[in-house]
Length: 201
Image (cartoon, rainbow, N blue to C red; front, side, top):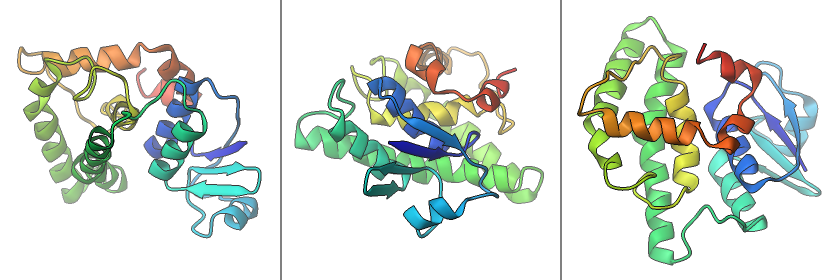
């Protein structure tokens, strides 16, 4: 099994995080988004990262890859057992991507432009506004660590890169505690590339 992974991209990071949580041994090939190889295009017509190759199977789009890994390596499970709860987790992932990841992508594409500044302000205010949802449960709307956390943690790790600082207030403390909790997981540490570690330095 080989994962073609962008060493600085949150979407590749989330797949590496799932692999680390599962304890799966895989060959990880770091690939710059600007230097996608012919080998990747042969497996993935879009040439996008991450791309997972497992024998004759090639998968791309991070959510598809994450769910495949969760089903192929069922322990520990990273999606709930029951259909309603699984659907809710998928919906949370969709909302994280639509509401937050899309803003981070805008910031990275135009960090000093008007669209970047607007997206930065919107993302910061949105995260601060939902801080209280982390008060009651240790993980995102769950007692258990799930694929939702695997999507959210790489985004939160990149806040300083995005020019966003979550202030230390009573309102934001639940979010800051959540960030500390997920960042301290051994699998999260294992999932980081050297370039990603530098984001926190």
